[in-house]
Each structure stands twice: as C-alpha cells, then as structure tokens.
Length: 356
Image (cartoon, rainbow, N blue to C red):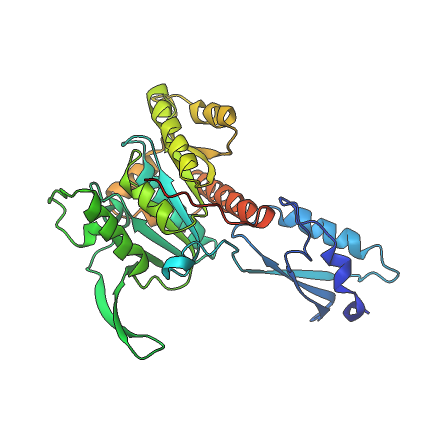
C-alpha cells in the first residue's frame, strides 16, 4: 500500500522556513515500505541543523492522512545535502558557500564568532573550512590549538601537467588556513595591499581545501583590501557583521554593512557579541531592524568562551551540553537558514561590481 503513495503527494508541500515546495527543491528521495513500519520516507535537507523538522513531519503525516488508505505507521529519515551558489567555482575552490565574518572595528570578538560558527556547522554534519584572513592579527590558530605548517604537494592535472597545491592544516575535523601557521607568533606582519591580495589568492585558489559545504572567512576589521579582493574573486554566499552592543561599535558596524552592500555581497545579518551588564544589550538587534537586515542572535559575556579560547580549545564548547552551546548552535542554525534562503528563495547569484 505505502509503496503506491505518489511522490507528487508530498512534493506539493511547502518546506517550512522557505517559500518553495519539497518537489521544487527535490527533497523527497524515497517513499517505500520500511522495516516494521507501513511507510518509510527519506527526506534530504538543504541546511544543517534544520529547525522545523517537527512542523515538516506534521505536514507530511497530515497529507498522508488524506489518502484512502493512510499508513498506520510512518518513519521519516533525514540526510543532509547543503545547497549553495558554489561560491568558489570561478577560482577552482570547491566550496558551496563562502561566508565573510567581518566587523567595523577590532576587539568585538569577530574571530571568536568565526571559529565557533565553523565548529557549530561542523558539529551539525557540514563539511567546513576556516580561513583566517586577518593577516595583521591572526588569532585562529591559537583559539583552536591548531599547529603545524601547511604542506605544498604536487598534483596532476587532467591534461597531464603538474601543479603545486597548498594543503591546509586539518584540525578537529576542520580544514584551517592562516598566516599564523607560517610566521612565529611574536612576528609583526608589515605588508602593503598587493601582498595581501597575493596571499589571499594563494589561500583561496591555490589551496586544496577539498569539497566544502561552508568556507568561513575571518576578515580583518574595518573596510579594507581583503573585502575588495574577495568581492572581485567570487560571488560570496554572504557576510555576517559582528559587533558589541555599545554605540561606538555600532557606528563602525554600520560602515561595514555599507561596504558589503557597495561591493554587492549579501548581508546575512548581524551578531551581537559580549552581550551583558558590561556592554549592555540590544544595540545590534535595533541596528539590524533599522537597516532591514536579519538579526542572527546574541552571544553573552560568558567566561566559558573566553576560557576555552585562551586555553586553545574553543571546540570543546560543542562537546557537552550547556547553555552556551545551545545559544551558539541556534546562531549557527540561523546563519545556515539565511544562506539557504538567499540561494533557494532567490537562486540567482549576486552581481559582482569591480571597484576601481
């Protein structure tokens, strides 16, 4: 009986959280009898940590109840196939979604947010890379406890020619690149713009990242060369702007938003970091509302994050249940959903504008 249930019955359902149907997104992969159940349904989800499973399952069971002989027991299983604009396709980077994590000023916890976002998406089943593009203050290696030097290996092209590719550091299930792996911690990086452009090009198009669902780019603070280089190289999935609640940080965050908008990078939203008694609360939410962009969540001034970062073990936050972990996972889910909406609801890629 259940094997005869037509795919069209479920394909007409709208995926909760989006404006498209299961059929349009090709998410129903199997409808068949299952072991010990009348009907087994396999759904392929386009985002990690999809937050509307309960609502989706309710819609499916309600739809099945409308047929003449509905199945008594239904088993719904999920797989993950992250969708994205293939952000790095034009430069040979096999990453479905490249996300810039930036800020208008330093000291707002941008690198911490980038690293926790990478860990959070990875813990949800996504394949994630983390690029530390903050050349003058590369803090990602220390936060993660990642060490070693990236290797250069020879690769064979389909035409038989040999090229050299950089291999990122593999740490805690993440592919990681940073200039911090190449120079001693106490050395200052004193470079002009062209050198930054060349390094970023090597880190993106000459590095063997593998196939990634997300490449998180920890941007330098401010509105400088790195953002321009990224906007010229590829169509980013979007940018996240991190700030603290106080007004002086928000003023600079507004400039960062304007910069991303000027170079045609979609704004995925704002994250308020260090929320609490010291800096206040709600400034980023209000600014996001005023600018008409999503508010992705707030991260409290919890000592757990600082301690794990100082001890080079930031990934441990996601290894045990805690309020901090739940909060960070909710933000990761919000980010993934915003990216998917940009791509699935508005599938056309953003237009690049090369600034002179």
